[in-house]
Length: 380
Image (cartoon, rainbow, N blue to C red; front, side, top):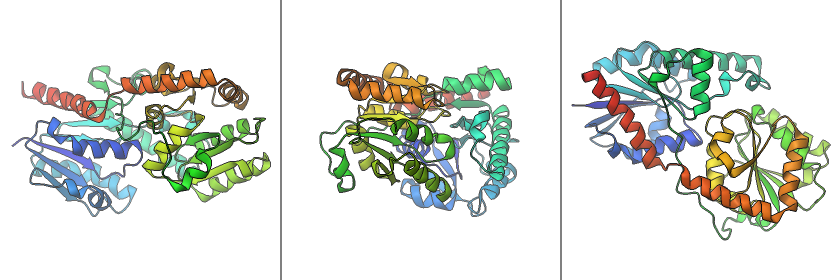
């Protein structure tokens, strides 16, 4: 019996969560008789509705205990479990895999941050050390994988040029678009109805220090029209960073016009994208920016940083700026706010670009083809 195993002991969120959800929804695209999902308890509780005779979850209490425990379990225990379970292939969508494996494996790289020097700014010493360790675990496990899937050409080329990664065992598959996101005509969520009727600039991001929200705040403070709001949606990394941004807003005399929504629902997010005057994406370090895919699908006019994979994600459907120049960002914002024709042009460009991005069914078809090719080559 052909068995595919998936390592789901990591905690997916954002685009990674949607990716896993859609793998389960499209398992029929994979030509295996059985799937074994090695899972944390938290992930099992989240995805257990997909369990069946064909899809078997095996929960590791040890891997669920902590990040360190998960690492030790993947590196020291999982390789032997794979032999015992007679696994044909292990698929690891969570950035790293067993460095030493007796079973063929495919690894998905979904992050680029730890490989960018400036990414480490704003993190504590312990967090920096953790990021550095993650970087080398990803590298070593990628080197020993039979194939690695990258989410952007930028990241694949980075691995090739800087770390001499073998391009012959690398593929690029863009993270798919979610059909949930599309332009809507009216707001139904009371939480945001008060300001979707007004002009507002939107930023959507998990609020880590590297996301560069400070540049947005500084640029926003230069806008002459005091009726425009800045709406920031996303959970904060730490309370101290939350306080830092609030204090900066007050220091810039824009505190009353900056709304920190925190984490929002997908319905609220779809409305925010659909009605915003501008979506600003200020992060300098992203793989294939899932937020931008969502925003384009809703027809948001976009201003994005010109670094890493953002130009690859949006192509001509965004205005780009140097993420370290608040003045350059302000000029882009002012162009959009004072030129309705330009803004409408980029709304149309967003929708057009979103149609060019594969949906998740196609993402899984492409992933399945890579898996099947690897198995076929190993059997010849």
